Image (cartoon, rainbow, N blue to C red; front, side, top):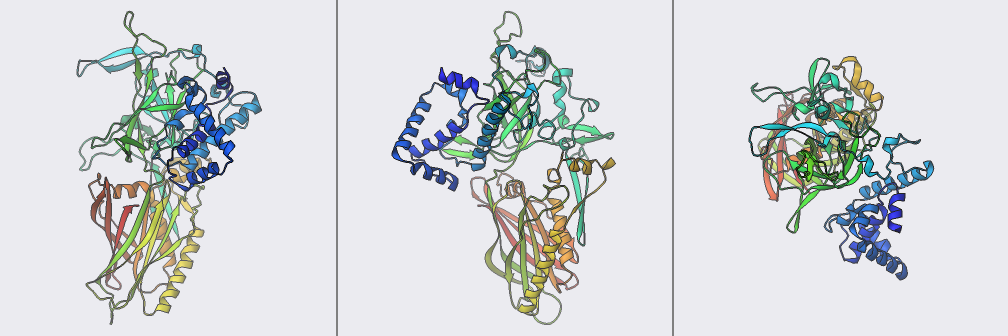
Length: 627
């Protein structure tokens, strides 16, 4: 009875107790700490007096002895299923702890169990109250489905089909319906029987896909941004389409444009919005769309569920807003091994058990469950994935003009950045200076090995890695060091004062307006190519002093790019590329992918630096691997 009363009193299923039980259970069972966070937690528990420790272990025994129905009612039991081989994520724990504190605080402040980012009581439809069975009313509609046993034939069936109309990649509450959710054209199907017409859908700016073309000049760079347009296969054959197909194509200003496909991190909380999410026992089915075929991913249980109790029961209208939340898996278990989910294009659907016993035809047994539509998403690499970039070889194809051998110096300037959080200001962190190599008496045709020198060793998450390379041919060590110092000071000054200028290829300055309104940040649509332009502009700005430059280079990487470069399942090498910074032409020459373990490979690339004024050509060899 006490457990049942607690279930009705809480604004959400308790997360704190299961998190504590998880840590205590792993400590009791001798599971090793996989990171410093867990080691600290175990240290705190080990430091408790014996009586308090015994009381906690008694509580753990009582928690484990609870019937599943009662435990699922009161507690967030996803923590009970946490694998012993998985590290505890402090950010994930903190997010759940803060969420519970906010929910309970709002309940006491407003005398109602409320969840949502409000400074005052929110509308009733966002209350997280116990749901009465009378409020869980099916909303049947006619759906065209394949006819069982009759290939190529379809039939129309009226039933409470679940349907996903929007996805929140970060598990936003539905109150944040504008900036936290991404919709698609299929959202109109339950209401009209067909995908949304462009005139029927007013998408928000963050829901469009964007293309931004960067350009650089001395001391500044600009971004000319426009909506992504459908494109066709190479060679001009076939029809133009958006990456997600018709459900992700709409129109803007009379032209076809593409919608954003959600990008989701492994281990993150994901929100689904739609209708006929009629059971908290629904499950989410996920499959990898891209070839080759991959392992079956077990269905994911819901961690939260909010049926719409505002819209009139039984109505099928666009305003219906059932929501369901689940945790995106990070891996699947095969035998005794955990296999990480590879980044790529996935599809997901929600399977809802027929708890209302809805019958399609009189006299027939009710179906066991109903399946929704599939929606697409792109899975990003794990935020904890580490990468290492090194350089270990210099090749002088052609030394500079003039008497005597060359004395080449190469330096790298590196930074991990999330530069587009602000409106237009690019916030660069402190740069790291790395000495790649300094050599004497280098002649044409010579290869010199060194190091290896580490340019980067760490994680990126959603940040970018930026690397700028400067190569000089010097006459003396003192002069070289002075030139390096001058360059460093000028480059740092440039980055401290850099602003991105938003271009105007979209009508009415819409992009700048939505950025200023806080609906969209430049980070949401600017790819690494813009950072290359920024780095290049900085190199031009800072390069007024150095004499006899051998190399200017700018490289940027996202975690997704580094993962694909080191993924053995992606057999192809990237295409060679070329860029010009001042008088230096830099060309990339992919060398190989060398399989190391599982689906991992070490990627090797040479970069060619050509200065026609000095008639010099140098190569540096770079290696990228997963650490």
